[in-house]
Image 1 (spheres, one colour):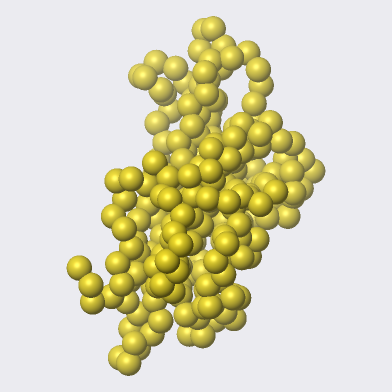
Image 2: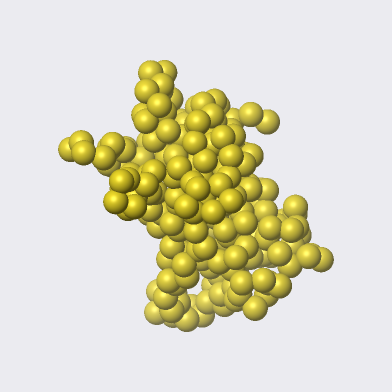
Length: 233
C-alpha cells in the first residue's frame, strides 16, 4: 500500500501500534530478520531526493526505568536479553530498511565520508511494559529517538547541522485481561518513530530541492520548528 500525504501517514502509523502489538516474535528473535517482529511504517515519499545518506551507529543513552507505576502497581519491562543482537544494532538496520522502502534518497553511501547527508541517531527510550493491576493488566511502551541530520561537507571538512530533534511514540493501553506481547508493542512504537522521521526528512528534502508542491505537515508536528538551510534564520 502506498501511503500518500503527511496528514494521512500519522493515523496509519498509529494503527500499526495495535496491529503489531499482537505479532508473534518467534522463532527468530531479531527485529531486522523476522518479518513478523517489525512491519515498518509503510511511508513512501513521492519525491526522491538526489542525494545519498549514511546512518551512524545508534548511540544508546537510555536511562533506568521505574519499577512501579503511580507508586503502587509493579511493572515488568522488556529486556534487551530477549533479543539475539544488541538493540542499537537492530534499530540501525531498521532505519536503513525504512529509508530504502520510503524511496527518500538516491542511495546509501558506503561510508560517512562519501555521504551527502549523515544521520546521527541517539536512543533515549525503548521499552514495553506490563503493569499488573487488581482488575487486569495495563500495557505501556515508550520509544524516543533523537536524530541530528548533518549536511554535505564544507571546505573546512565540517558538516553543518540541518536538523536536530526528538521523535517519540508513547503508548498506554487500557486495562484488559487480554495478553499482549510488550516486545511487539515496543517494536510498533519504533515503527511510528521511524515514520515521523521519514516524514520530517521528506519535508526537509523538498525544501532543499525547491519542490514547490508540499504535503501538509501532520498536526503532531505543528509545534516543531521548520527546517532551515545553513546561513538562514
